[in-house]
Length: 153
View (tube, helix red, strand yellow):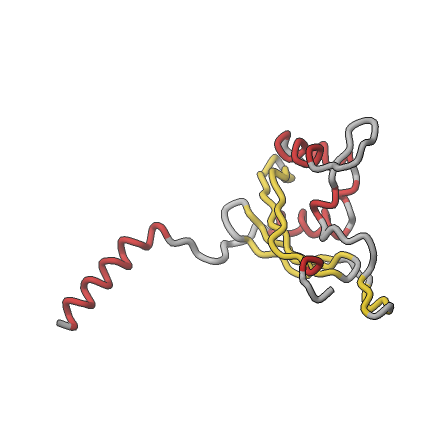
């Protein structure tokens, strides 16, 4: 009976293997540098950078998410950040105001998760990168976790 159960379980695992994805994928070192520079050097705030490093789809997302009535084309650059307006304060004391990438992990063939601080607020975004010559194009960015959303703050 144990042998039959082992065969059935083994067969199910073998059949399910193609549908299971590994947690982490090998990271392209150039992609890691691109993401780190994009965030740490605040390149996401530079409209020239965005126009040359975002796909049309991503630029449309940035325009569509710009919530203010302002003339001209404007981008919701905060999609690359936590959305914090101020540094992290607890009980009136600024406990941290640093902004920097903490970790970057390859999550799929093109998706990378970067966890960063934004004026002290911790968040995790996933960014979809497409290799284009010696650089990358950003095709999407989504927020996965955001300390600002916690009820504790």
